[in-house]
Amino acid sequence: MTEPLETLTTTATSSLTTTLTSLLVKSTTLLTGLTTLLACLLYNYQNSLLYFPTIGGLPRRTSDNPKNYRSPAEYGIPFETHWIPCEDGVKIHSWLLLHREGSDNDNDNEKFSKKIPTILFFHGNAGNIGIRLPNAMQMYRHLRPANIWLIDYRGYGDSDDAKVDERGLKLDAEAVLRYIHGPRGTGGSKNHLPHVDRNRIFVFGRSLGGAVAFHMAHYDRVRSPKLNKIPSQSKHDDDRNNKLDSKHDYPRPPLAGMIVENSFLSISTMVDYLLPYVAPFKSLVLRINWDSAKVASQINEIPALFLAGKKDTLVPHEHMLGLFQIMKESRGMSNNNNGSEDRSLDRGGRILKMHVVKDGTHNETWMQGGRDYWTAFKTFLTEALA
Image (cartoon, rainbow, N blue to C red; front, side, top):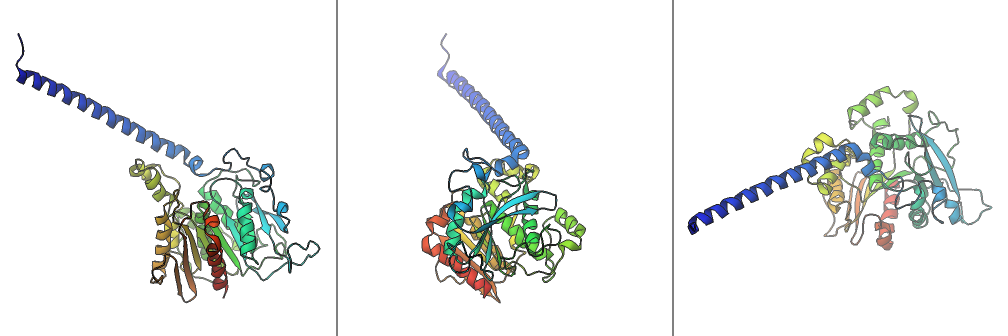
């Protein structure tokens, strides 16, 4: 006997509903499973997802790099190698590129310029300082006269093997400042940096290096007895500051300025952008902070320049705009950009600038910015020291 059409329709609808419900449950289960898997991977391997001492098949050690990426000696300029001791016993490797008085090509001239800026260069999360030599050489030539000091993090390049994490890289940055202003606690002699003017130290950081630069600027303000105390970033910082003895507390000039290029607000905000499905669980799994947004509101004295590539696809351009805005508000400044994307603010010597490279990408802004990029950089150095 043939079933009525009405019955067949009801049966088909019921079957379809059951199928869709089953698919929905399976999809939800799959999505939940994938999200849980991503959260577990983030929790267990987050340091490995951020720090890459080797990249693209290139070796870790600078001596094993391709030609012209092994040493400043390949460029025929004067330089020194410095091993910087950290608080936990780790030593980090660095190259200090120097300028001779007169011509840098005069190898017989042993007199070096002294009253010039020195720029501490903290690189991104991948590869060693040798990979940055072409960039450093452009800095060396366009910002002349300025010493360029390339610094490798622990576990990177020729630095000591050590666990690479946020705490360790912060120790690296702090050690560099103590080494410069030593010799107490640094292992250096009284004249271990005869060619460096301690009154003209700038810190530059790109990408992850920008977060390291922010930390150095914060640490510089906390430890300098010439300036008011500001809050530490964490209880760990408070505990360590309380334990530091007099060998770390010394009268010294503060940093002359900070330059940050294509860096981020915080790792937490980067998770929101890169892993939106994990974002709701990040408070449970995320152990890396690098909270530059918080630091930016606390270092309202240091002259600062932001170099931003507008076409950065790794770190959204809004992060650099956000960092600039936070520092602007913390200094009680108002915009004065006359419709330009570049911004230049000055209140009582507290210089704050932003230079935007319209076609700049994450790692290549310094190549794509042309003459205007270097002009903005050098002008900032001059104004910060005026």
